[in-house]
Image (cartoon, rainbow, N blue to C red; front, side, top):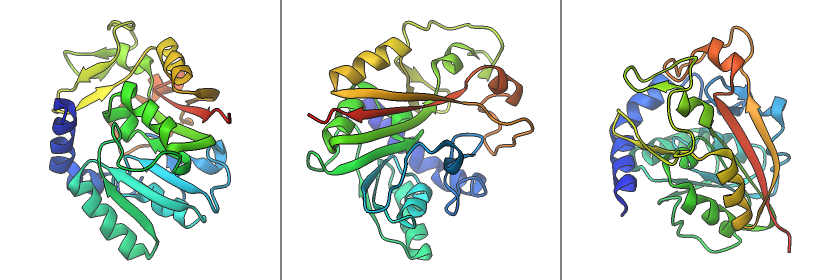
Length: 251
């Protein structure tokens, strides 16, 4: 197991219960929402109609998204690295009475056959905490021709504006944009990001075509349970999160 995979599994096993409790009010199972400021999927329309589709949540955590989409008719599989997050996911799916296949594993090497899904997606999840040079080809492998890969994560803007002395986002660009890849966080986790051009080259090498890049802007007065992520006024001026929407080539 790569060291960052082991570190992130330990990290999520350690904080899972606290995380689920702290963010319970924002992790909606009735209304699926994107990101730190919980922007509704019904407003963004990124996933489309999921009824009758085979869908993989790439880093499902407590499976709130998976429950919401299963209720909309998707055949859901939730993948997560963390034993503790999956324990919460099992409790939630049982309590809500929905069918979700839960699977433990790394998004860098998913133990499932090629072309298993019509849609692979995540809201942060695996695309924040796993190496994109492995996860993007894996998502492409798991998709059927014409299948959709949609994921939300922090923008490169956010990473280059973090003051490492305080771990706070500031109005200045402080860090090297071109060296973005692996980031060792102060909380013991490892996160990942790439410059925009490198994302596009990686998609193309993996047989994926970019359909959209949606930069999430929270509304005025938005609130969040993720208080330390970025100041609201900063995220109203500069994108703190974005959603890539890419499709596997049909041929």
